[in-house]
Amino acid sequence: MGRDGEGDLSIDILSVAGLRKEYGATTAVDNISFNVGVNEIVGLVGPNGAGKTSTINMILGVLEPTAGAIAIEGIDLATARSRALLHTNFAAVYAPLPGNLTVMENLRVFGLLYGVAGLAGRIEELLRQYDLETFRHAKCGALSSGEQTRVSLAKAMLNAPRLLLLDEPTASIDPSAARAIRARIRAFAGQGRAGVLWTSHNMHEVADVCDRVLFMSRGKILLEGDPRTLPARHGKATLEDLFVAVAREPLTLHGE
Image (cartoon, rainbow, N blue to C red; front, side, top):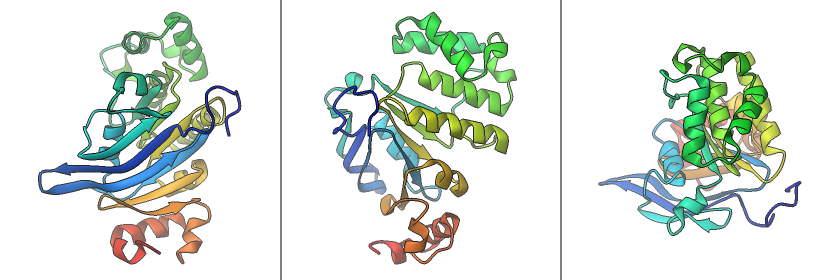
């Protein structure tokens, strides 16, 4: 699937095996396993409380799993955290960048944190790529939702990630801006050696952008497949109908 010959293309960008997260007596993530391949966008969807954000936080190394293993490009997160996360990044509408810093200041601070080589040139490249050149000296808190999303994505691209985690990246932005963001992410995933894990409640978006979708409910992955053909396999007309069925009656779908 890779196009630039970089690395071992037989190794998945992300591999999750037997992942479990318990908070006291509550099991938020219950023994899930999945992968994200090279040049693949995988949707992780499900109702609120399904375990999606806990899963992403474990992949980012923010939360420690109760059990299971996570490997990024074949590197075990538990034993080589810094190396595994070297080419990983994250963006979410609910995690905005510091609003009192300008676009340039934010990109410089995060670039220094990531140890990006040739940082000044990389920032200029991303400002052009994400149409942010006119906002370089604007404070992020004064930007529109769509503009802030573009800045967050530029920040997420600073370290040329191989694994990009997107948690509701287009929530609260207008359809035109959301369409542009989806096009950028598709282009990113389609070149080089990279993969994307994308969570969203927008099933139209998932069907439009994702190569494969995983449906979570109550900490488990119940269904997996192509978002364009999966609904019909379970007697539903649309991905949204399937989402509603998973949310309301997960036990009737598990194991179908």
